[in-house]
Image (cartoon, rainbow, N blue to C red; front, side):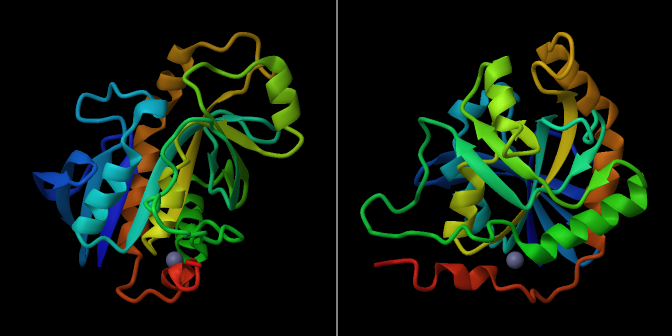
Length: 253
Ligand SMILES: [Zn+2]
């Protein structure tokens, strides 16, 4: 099967790596193609080749279209998030099951000229979520959460204390990169699930929050995350049993 990986991390141990340049109608994307077990893996650095594109400027449409053009059926996303709950600590892993979108100014759909309304009552692929969770549990043992509501902010600024107080009533983790990536993947009928690595407690839940702290923990946890991703892909069969592909049927009026 062809599997897409969208992350800000380098994943170790991927063999026979080759960088391909894909020209989509939304822009150019560099994709790293590799093999793992019986699968072909196509990886994209969400923040661009130089890792310098901020969340609100990421070309989400080009990234998803490039993976579609590569023939990808499933996407595993890696996201760095802040925790909104005392029970979720820095270094923990959350496999979210739902989201709340507080972004403001992004390009949210492939269908600007048609009335296409994608169902979001079950936004993440249940089969892929379960695989990520089982493999994360096997490798990391503690601090792995099988559910979570991901609240997405526009950024690039971090949140105020009052915003965090409000968000924490309705969600578990906060970040800037899930939307519109997930929505665009669903519009293409792809399976999508996210592995979220918690880098910090959100504003007001820890003393001072610096952007450097966020980078530090995602680097420290990089090896564990790589192992979980590799193990998840290796454990994947070649048949898809979920119904993510069917979501696009009946979405158009
Ligand atoms: Zn699925």
